[in-house]
Image 1 (tube, one colour):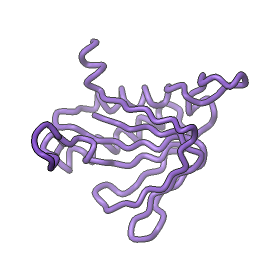
Image 2 (spheres, rainbow, N blue to C red):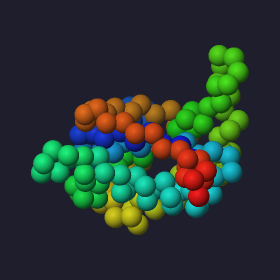
Image 3 (cartoon, rainbow, N blue to C red):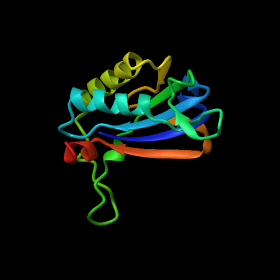
Image 4 (tube, rainbow, N blue to C red):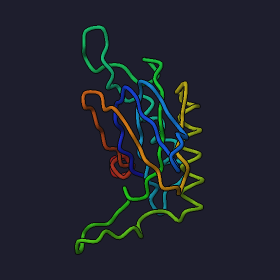
Length: 153
């Protein structure tokens, strides 16, 4: 499972010109589900994101999590994060999970975020053509890949 986490002051996602999800201060999370990912990776990813300390404390140090600042998360599924770009110039998306599996794990991931104490989790529409808008704060952008934690286990 892969994620791009962007600290934002606001973010929204539109489908067919209509806003389907929007947040104020918090994270925009672009989530890619890989073939072979399980609920264990979804839970681990949600826990790591909920506890990621990149919001400033009273001393202007990045020391607070999204839950510490009562922040929100906009979670958007993005299979293109799973692209294999080793050969040629056209990415292959075969490493991404099959749509039914990916959707189920994406939904579990969002539920895990709530269980980790995130106040509000908004989403896009899985598989839709989405237009994402954000105001990146910092900018702060972090990339997570559950393979990192598997190797160190």
